[in-house]
Length: 83
Image (cartoon, rainbow, N blue to C red; front, side, top):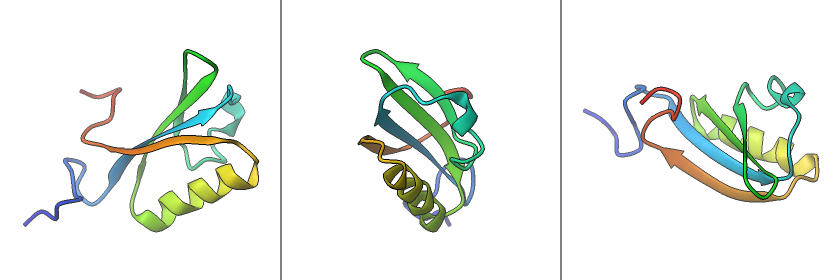
């Protein structure tokens, strides 16, 4: 039986995090291997799979500690790179 927050990846969840500014691709490993793409208006969109909310909060704390302005956090039904 699936829990309501479980998606097609099994027990992992896919999140999109948008932040203000253009993050360098060098942050990829530091931010738990979230992919980084760029949106209009100097917004970086990070997308990644996390096993649980503890890891998600860890990523959000890293963003906070770097002084990066958080714009959006959203759980996705599927990874945008894999429709």
